[in-house]
Image (cartoon, rainbow, N blue to C red; front, side, top):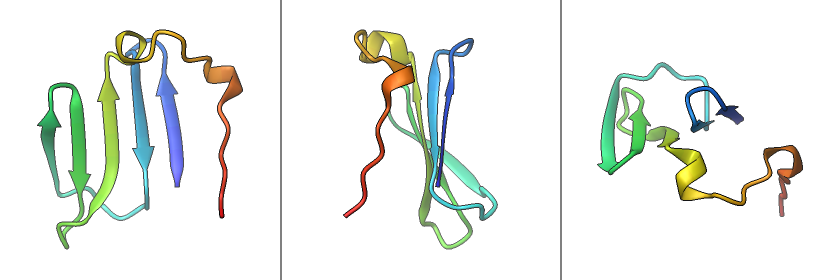
Amino acid sequence: MKLNIDKAADALHLRLDDSPITESQEAAPGIILDYNESEQVIGIEMLNLSKRTPYLDVSNLQVTTS
């Protein structure tokens, strides 16, 4: 899994696996889902990140597993 925050594009992209993206679809305004050939969601992109999360401190992101 990979998380990329592009400050210049004001976007966040979460990639769940490395399989090729065969289709992308806007699920809601500014929320794009990427699908593989098995029609599984393998990526999520959020546009206009600073407007959606105005208090987000990207230097303080935490990852937890259970």
